[in-house]
Each structure stands twice: as C-alpha cells, then as structure tokens.
Length: 583
Image (cartoon, rainbow, N blue to C red; front, side):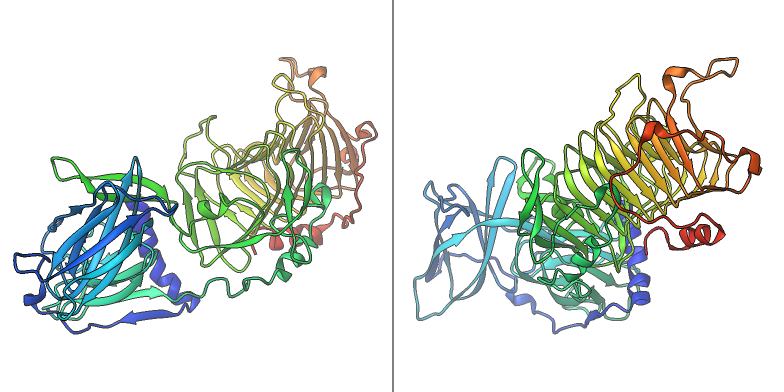
C-alpha cells in the first residue's frame, strides 16, 4: 500500500503540471500562541456543553465517547486528550469555561465506527449552553504526500486530538474524520517553516517542506470534476451508445437515450430506468482507517480497511444503472478482484485511466460497457494459471461491449469470455505482451457451451507468444482485425466452435487453427475440431495458393446483425494499428 502511494506522489505533481490542472497554493498563516493550547475542563468551570448523541437511524448512541477541546487546541503528542463517555441514553454533559470549543463524538458498533464534529461557542453571560442532539455519520480521511526536507513535519488538526507523523515514504493519513471542512496544521505554528490549510475530508494534499528555511507549501488539485461530462447531461453517453454494434449492439450500459438507463432484472431482462452519474475522484482503492478509540496496551490503534471514498470500487458497487466517469488521469490499482453486477458504463474518454492489480470479473452480470481504459501489468507477474484475467466476462454474463481499450501486459490471458456468456462485442481494442489476447470459451472436456457468442472487429494483436483469439465452442465473428505479431495462431477455432473469419489482416505464419489437440504423429484429434468460414482475408506471409487453407462453411453460421466490413488491405492494417486502443 505505501509503496503504491509513494508512486502516486512522485508522478502526480509532474502530471498536474503537464495537464495544466488548477492548483491551489496555501501560504503560511498567522501562528497560534502557546497559551491557548489547553484541554477543556477544570474545577472552576461556569458552563457546560450538554448533548444527546444519535445514530443516523435516529436511535440513541449509548456509551459513545465525547471530547471537548478549545478550537485552537493542538496536541503535543499522540492520544493526548481524554474522552468522556455518554450514558445508556446517549446523554453526556461536559463542564467548560466560557470560550469556543470543538466537540468530537465517536461511536463504535462492532467494526463500524461513526462520528461527528461540531463547533460550540459559550458566552460568559450564558452559564449553561446546550446542544440538543448530535447525529453521528460515516467517517473519512484526509491523506497527503510529503516532499521531505531536513525535518519531518507533524500534521495536526486544530481543535481535535490528531497528531500524525508521515511515514518513511512521506505518506500520512488523518483518519476517523466525519464529512466536513477542517483546519490542517502542518509543522509548528510558532515557526516560520509551517502552514495551515482548510481541507475537506476526502482531500489529497501535496506538501512540500523540502526547503527548511522557507514556509511549507501545501497544494491540492482544484475540483474540476467531469468538466467534459457535466452532471445531468447524458448526450455524450447517447453518442457512445450509437457506436455499439455486433452482438452487443443493444447494450444501454449505465444509460439509454432520453435520460433513461438500462436496468437488468433478476431474469436478465434489460428495461429502461433512471441512471446516475458517479465520478471517480481518487486513485485509491481501499484506505486503512485507525480507530483511535480502540488502542491496545502497546499503543497501537485498531485498523480497518474500507473502500476509499470516491474510488473506482465505490462507483462500481453502486446499486442501479451508473455512468462512471474519471476526474483525473492515473493508475487505479485494484487490491482485490473487482466483482461487478449489472448496468454500468466505465467511461475513460478524455482521461488516461490505467487499471492494474487483481482485475475485473463479472458474475451473471449484464449490460456493461468498458470504454477507453488501459489494463496494464497486474500485481501477479508469475505465469500462474490461477491468476485473474485483466477482464473476465463469465458465468452467463450478457450484453457487454469492450471498446477502445488497451490490454498492455499480462502473464497469460488478457481478456476472457466464457461459461455461457453471450452478446459480447470487443471492438477497436489492443492486446499486447501476453500469451493469449482473448480466450473465448473453455476446452470441450471442461464444458461444451454452444450458447456463447462474440463479435470481434478492428482489434490489434501484437507481441503474443501463443494466440490472438483462442476459441472453444459457440459462435465467433472476427472481422477487420489485424494480427501483427502472434507466434502461433491468429484465431484458434476448436471444440465445435463456428467461426466466421472475415476481412482480417494476418501478419503471422499461422492465421487459423482448427484443432485443439493433435496426436504424436501430427494428425488432429477429430473431436476437437472447429468449423471455419474464411472470407476475403489478407495473408502477408502466405503464398496465394495457401490463402484458402481451413476454408469451410462454419456449418452455415452467419451473424444475425447488420455490419459493414472494410476491405482487408494495408490501409486497414495501418488504420487499426493507429486508431485502436485507448484514445
């Protein structure tokens, strides 16, 4: 986790400069004086802060913890301030002197922690000030990356007991914060080498304290979320849907025309329903949250991994039809497989979105679009047959469109379509640096599934040590693809698969293979045969007499949708090589 975060830090600033992102520089503000750093309480208090804590569902938050501190309080050490516990009815009363305070409340139920923060000002003329109720909500974080200099700055929040030292990579997390705005103090406010900044939970701060005799500079990207795709305007999604073709031509993704989205019911039927827009604002996947109210005898706080707010995973797990957009370029590392439901459009247009880690898997899903994404080297690098694919479409998934995506590198297979998945189109995508680009179906001795179907057109295959497309059973329509450097077969059509291979360019020695298995003497195993129809393909490395090899009739198979195939020539090859992949 930390090394990944460090990489994000080292690449984020040059990237921001390159893209011309707006940056907010936060200068040094006036320092606080030491005489105000006192914990509230004492024997001569004339006022009280009284409140009842409530959970989000309206129930009382019994036996919760409350801390009342002066609004300019800054801790000198970690866990310096004490808590007061509410009673069984959620009531608590804290005696204080007149002044301005920050009230922090925390409730833990099993592994779920909620909290709240409120500012309270007590006038000396009002001896008893009361906050009637305080509702607790979900917690978040502010995290940052420090460009280190000669000293390591302490990160604190005024009015709260937060004392955070960045780790050896310069990464820090201020955890267990409710949603809201906080005053983050970096360094000693009595020294020139410090800064103070108003920051929202969920923010990422970039801290430059590398020059020890200058003020610390804190920057964060301005919120320019989805300016290419304004909220509520679905016209660009409509334009994308108009390009869908092949077996996935009817896919509505997270949205259908006129403001309605595609929704899949329990029977797999797609109908119209209202969709929502979700904008991915962070490259983080999970974040580690420390519960400073649960500390062991060694002083270590209990930690929990939670889905990062604003993450790709959070958007992907939303209920109902969702159009997922990306606020910024970046590498989105999946720390666990991303298992998808239905009715989602992952739209990376206008961004450089790189997905790595454990890969994406569907599970009896439908109505999915993957547009303009780059799937790059995963966390698993060994040639391990248990490795996940970059994208796995399986278990009866249907109506999926993969368009203008790049699959850069993977140990074995980069994308698979198997176990009864149907109405799938893969178009204008690149498959490079793997053993096999696309696996279609499983071997006949594992499962025979004639229901699966796949359209592949205008895809580029290069740097593959085995096959471009490895097909088992079902029906496959491959047209206008360019198989540039594939060591074995461009297309394998085996195990009773019916394949229409039409107007492709093959720059490899073995365009098509019909059998999965061969005997030791080189004769094929008839039970593993596939049925291919070859139509007007171009073979760069074959003599004209060999161009009709494996030219059957595919048992009469022809697609039931309309399409237009370009002539297979050098112009097509150059066009596919240049225009395929993320754009």
